[in-house]
Image (cartoon, chains in turn green, yellow):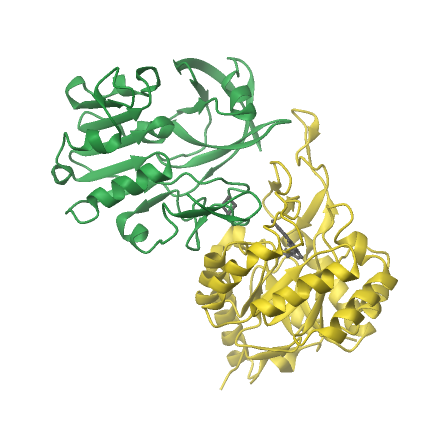
Length: 247
Length: 300
Ligand SMILES: Cc1cc2nc3c(=O)[nH]c(=O)nc-3n(C[C@H](O)[C@H](O)[C@H](O)COP(=O)(O)O)c2cc1C
Ligand code: FES
C-alpha cells in the first residue's frame, strides 16, 4: 500500500473530480489501481493520466467514491497497483468511444489523430470532450441538450469505423456489447476495456471473471478475438455473493 | 512411463496439483478453464446454506511473499451453486465441493446437495479463521468434528475430506478426531492481521484475516508431517506451494496430493501445468516411476 499526496484537483463535471498526483510507478494507459478510502472500502480506478504526473478521475456514485471525490490538495490517497494489462498502442487515426466515466481510461490515448465519441446522459457529464480537436469531437447526450440526441451507437453513425487503424472502447458493459455487436462483422481492430466489480484486483477472488478470464489480470483490456468466445460478455455476471445474474 | 497419476482421498487424479478452495472457484466458467489448463481437480469456494456477500473491502492485504485475506465466506448459497457446478463439470475432471456450516445437520444437508450436483468428493471447511460461528470455531472442537465426519461418512456415497486449521494447540488431536475421513487437507490460513501506519487502522475491514502464501509453507509442512505420524490416512498438503520443490517437500512430508491458492497471484492459472511439468522432469531425472514412491519418504 502506498500513500501519495494529491498535488492538484479539478472538478470536471458536477459529479466528477480529477485528482492529480506524482507517483513514480510505471503505468500504461488502460491499467488501474485499487484506491482505499479508510472505513468505506476499496475502489478500482483506471488512471486518466499515465505520465510522470498521474491522475484518477472519480465519479461520486456511492459513499466511498463520494468521499474520494472530496479529497483535497495536500491530502493523501492510499493505493495499491498498478494492475492489469494496458491498451495496445496503435499509430494512425484512432477512434475513442467512451460512455459516462469510461472516457477517463481512454484519456491518455487522446492525441492529434484521435476522434472521440463522447456519450453521456446530460451535457454537464460529457467528460474530457474539450481535450479532442474541435473537428474530431462527436458529442452525444441522451437528453439531446448538446450534440447528437441519443446513445453511443447514434454517434457511431457519424463515422465509418473502417477508416480507423484502431478503435478503443470503454464504458458500461451493455454499451460495450452494443458497440461490439455493431462492428463485429466489419474489417476493424478494436480493444474494449471492461468494468466488472473487483474485490481483490490480483486474480484470486473470481468476482471479476468473464468465461474464466480475470478482468483484473488478463484484462481489463480485451480485443475482438478474445471477446468472440466470451459467452458471459454482456450477458451475465456474479453479484458480491457469487450469485449469477443477467446484465 | 513416468506418471503423476495419483490415488488420494478416494479419487483418482491425473495430476496431484489441485486448485485450493476460495481461489478462482466461484464462477463455473473459471473452474472449467483452470481444469482445462492443467489442474488435476478443483475445490470449489466454500458454500453454505444461505447467500452471503462476505465482508466489505478491503478483503485482501497483499505483500510480496504473502497475503492476508478476510473475504468473509461470500457464496450464493447451495441452491444457486448448482448451475456453476454444472458448467465446471463439462471439463470432465473431478470437482470437490467445499462446504461450511455450524452443525452436523447443515453439513449433511449441504453435502447431500453437492453429491446430487455431481461432485466427486466433499471437503469440509473446518478451518476458516475469520468468520464467527464457522470454520475453525467448529474445527477446533474434536467432539463436534468427530460427530460431523461420522454422520457424513455414514450417509454419503462420495468421499469426505476434512480441511483443518493450523490455529489449534494440537493438530494431532483434531487429525485423530477426523480420521474417519477419506483425506485430511492441511492447512487453511493462519489467523493474522495488518495495520496501516498512515491511517492508524487495521487494513482489513474485518480486522482479522488469514495468512497464506510463501510465508506459511513451513507451518503447513509441519502440520502435514505431524498428522502423517499420527494417523494412517491420505493427506493433501496446502499452504505456500509456488513451485515443484515446494510440492515435493509436502509429498516427502507425507502428502499424496497438494493444493495451490495464493501462488496464482504470482504465476496465474498456468502454475498447475508448470508444476506438473517440472515434477515430471524431476521424476525422470531421478529415475522415479511414480510420484507415489516419494510420499512420506522424509518422515522419521
Ligand atoms: C482469497 C482466499 C480465499 C479463501 N477462501 C477459502 C474458502 O472459502 N474455504 C477454504 O477452505 N479455504 C479458503 N482459503 C484458504 C486456501 O484454500 C488455502 O488453504 C490457503 O490459502 C493456503 O494455501 P496457499 O498458501 O496456497 O494459498 C482461502 C484463501 C485465500 C487466499
Ligand atoms: S478482482 Fe479478484 S479475481 Fe479479479
